[in-house]
Length: 393
Image 1: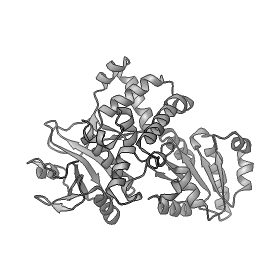
Image 2 (image 1 turned 180 degrees about the horizontal axis):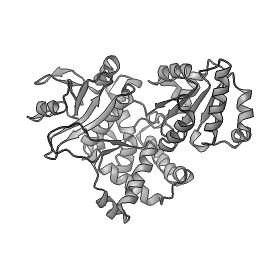
Image 3 (image 1 turned 45 degrees about the vertical axis):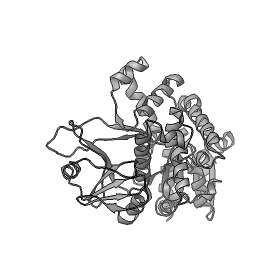
């Protein structure tokens, strides 16, 4: 079923693989990395190895010898974070192939964790590897209907959840994914965290979607210290399950909020953690606005160009912009996010945009039209802003 969906990153991954000796495709488990890798590899000479499969691990008992036998192929190594010892081997093989004129398309590394993987690979493969992050499905990857967009928002972007037979099956799938992370994956990755405690934190973050965090209060509720809470947050962030958005840090003559905001990256996981099981239930739930905000943020960040930076802006007095994008062109986009179909902006919104020197001002709302409101501010649908980012960035 996943193969029915044309992923936004297909051309980018294909072209990058053709240009670089190694490419790392990073994303949460079950987000579609393996399916995408097989899609771009189906018409070229390739070999796929799952580093969680005993039979494939056996083949890599002598990795240098085995991989040398396949020097003419694209080698796909799935769950690469399980074998960090392979990075120096890959560096040697890449350099050896360079001497013989073979430069690009040698290794495609798939990983479900970011920080350790990035640190280990960047040390060993500096100048030889390019990184691409893969999120869940976004609205430009699905059927262009209101019903499909509502389904994506409720169920989230994991393909198996989105394509489930009904909402109940999607929520069951998401519950199993959450438990797999807590009970199997996180312990296997070496993190010593009680599953029940980490689930409580994950659920607390869901209730605080898009808010700055009071670490001491979270720590008290979990009966641990603030340093431990910070380490737990790092785990969920490094596993690409939670997104940390940093505050705008330019020299503005106002007292600014300095703590980051956290979002549950997948709206389906957010809703499962909060017990929101249907679209009608979502519409009547207090999390509605923040759920929409997180859904929009994740969609926007999924299509941002390389080297673009994302922030939020909030003063100590409460004036804020939900998303500030610093584009590679040096343009600054100020994006306010409102779920309603008749969005209202605060009277000082234009002044706030001036604080960050915004060159473009947008409101992303729950409707389908595009129209101006006030001083150079354009109201757009989520699909509309994604299309504009793809064209203008």
